[in-house]
Image 1 (cartoon, rainbow, N blue to C red):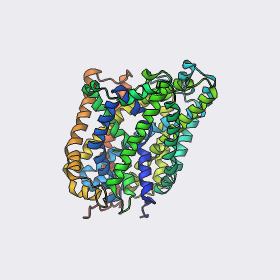
Image 2: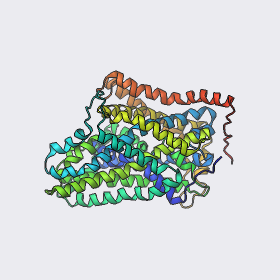
Image 3: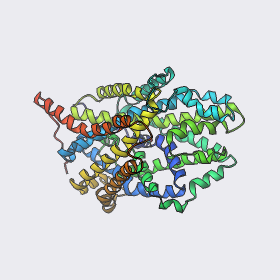
Image 4: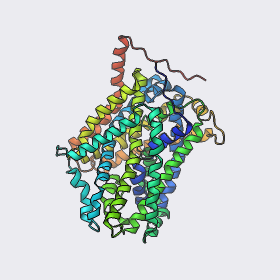
Length: 507
Ligand code: PHE
């Protein structure tokens, strides 16, 4: 077998993990959720969810993969043969997610190249908010199958970039993250300066930071905070397994996971400052919504054309905004592919590069569905199920597998193996993995189902039911069945001479 590609330094690993965690979710979902849930109140609950759930689970994934030196599928088989399917589910769900995350990435590129158009739209809200629909020609319904050429071109650029960044696994990832992690922070800082110096910025900051205690009684606050922690840390998606598996024996996982989680949170807060001051400065605070795509492509363009009286300045600012989103999205997008590649190549002993090419090609073709005129509707459905069903159930299953059928002491020893200043305490880790996380996640899942069936008649977003069955339920079933389908394939391969690795946790 080829020698495993490893991170070239501690910093590379940390940056790659931060790059994955810090993504579009920080820029638009986080501020939107804060606006929805009384600003500061959301920040506090989010921090709490990060401590009791996010951080322990992040440490768990990284350390298990470092120990086994394998991606998600083989790492979960190492935990127990019957849990291999959880690794498959995480990997398949990642495959689903990258098929549309790449499209959102392409849209961001599309807006970046078209940001010069803001120059002629000063004060013209209507043209600004229509720009995205005009370029993509989206219908908002599940019908309309033409693909606008320019969007297809952006999609190809998106996939080209993704492939370029991960073509040599940890080696090439290590190089690009030095740029893709710092660039968005610099761009955000530039935008924060502009935002904070606008009249009205204070109103925005007040809304963002001052807690509104009334919001605490709303259960959706808790649900949204837990969901966001989960989504934001890129856990349960095969990614942190892959990244952990490239770690050397000397890595201090306890400290690194803390750095990753808190950097992720810091960027979310910085994005919040940008969003709230800019919206406050343009008198649009009421327009911030929790829907990321709506904010980035319809609402934010309106803020851009109202920033100043100078069209050229506004256009430059718009370009900075979308460039920031490009640099945020790219390292999240390629981390998903890397997670899938590591999983599959470890399982079947195929060269990582071959798997990467195949994964990019297949999901590249699938992603074309989402750039059709009906694409946004399909994306919305697939995204909803991937997040409210698949991701959460993988989380519950991982916690049960590792918390209840494996030794948490062993896992924690791995986390703390090289701990210097900060050691993860057993009570914190075990209580979280064994009880708090699975209970909270199950609660979240039940909440989502009650919401869907009891309050919305089992229908999401007003789309036709057949579309929800195809793009929602059917995909969820496939995601969780993938491990069992794979078993059949593996059994056949074994007859033909394929030998699975022996995976043991050596003390
Ligand atoms: N964590 C990323 C964000 O906050 C999102 C992401 C989702 C990354 C799926 C990878 C995979 O935007």
